[in-house]
Length: 172
Image (cartoon, rainbow, N blue to C red):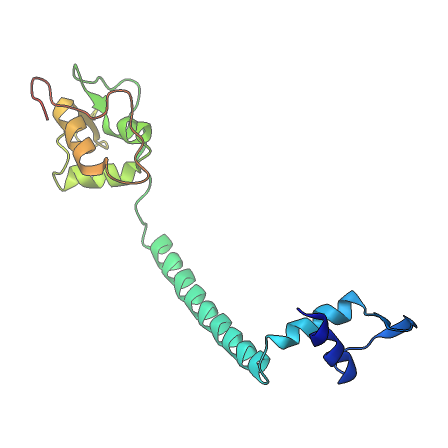
C-alpha cells in the first residue's frame, strides 16, 4: 500500500495518527491492520458473509444429525462385524493363505475382501471346523491373482514382494 493512501486515510479521519515531530506520523499497527481489512470489504459484505456462514453451519448441523441417525440405525441393525482371524487349529491346504491375512498384508479391509469372495470376484475355498461354525476363506494362487486384479489400482492397496500375483504356470 502506498504512503499516499495512508496519508489520505489519516486526512479523512479513517485512520488515527500522532505526530511526534513535524512531517512524521506514527500509526498503531492494530489500527493500521483493522483499517486495511476494511479496504477489501464492501459495505454490507460482512453481514452477507455472516449470513452465509450461519446458513452453512445450519446445513452442516442438519447433515450431522442425519449421519448420527444413520449411524444409530446401522448400530441397531447389526452392521457387518469385522472378519476374525481363523483359529490356529484350522489347517490350510498347501499353497493357500487366509483371505483375511492376505487382505491385511495388502492394507485392504477384510470385509471388502470377504465381499469380493462372496460375489465370486475372488476364487477361494471355505474352511471350517464344523458345519455350524463360521467359515474362513483360504485362497490359492488363483485367488491371490484375483485379489490383485480386483484391487491393485486402488490408492490404499499396498503391494508385497510377490505382486503382481500370478496364477501358477500362467503368465498374466
